[in-house]
Length: 139
Image (cartoon, rainbow, N blue to C red; front, side, top):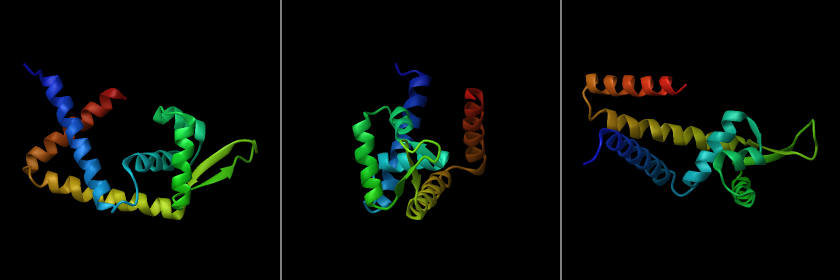
């Protein structure tokens, strides 16, 4: 018998995967889901060290280096030296990186909107209120 908790977890996971794959599909192969996640993280912190990305993504340093190389080649990020410690390399978004994140956000809004339209106004409000409440409890 499936518990309510496992049904909830499964539904949230499936919805997240559907949203993510649809965003990537509509991006016409410009970026992968993992690269997009990395760009969101970099944007959140303005500039970040490669070691922070390694810790956040829980991958080997070489994997982050390869991904940053690809993002840099696509002009989504650039490496800059830390002004306080020239040995430290930071990564920041380029204008192109900001543009692709804006595009991904617009696509996400459209996708979520199409799902929300399938609910009544009351259902959409209720599910949003409940999820926001769950997020606040975690904080």
